[in-house]
Image (tube, rainbow, N blue to C red):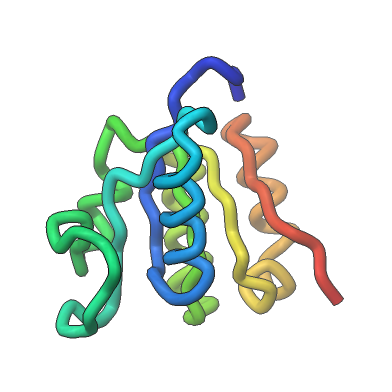
Length: 126
């Protein structure tokens, strides 16, 4: 990815990790990255961010041409794989924190990464 290009993030999940990412980006404008939309499961839950940032419609993120990075920090491995796969096919880079999803689908994800030329980033853990 070009370092000068602004990262426009579509975030799936706003638990501890998602909210932490949001706060870091809010406090560090020099990162040249911002979260445009957050997809959540439970719209009734109180969150420490503007209400208009949230949606329950995954397509609002996956079909948004302005979003160039999908960050996925949800606990549903099947949904996470669907999101990551579709985002890669859509030309977006993907960052995932879903160890279970990655463990179960790494060969398919790496193949998609090679096929599309898009980045798939994750943190290794045991």
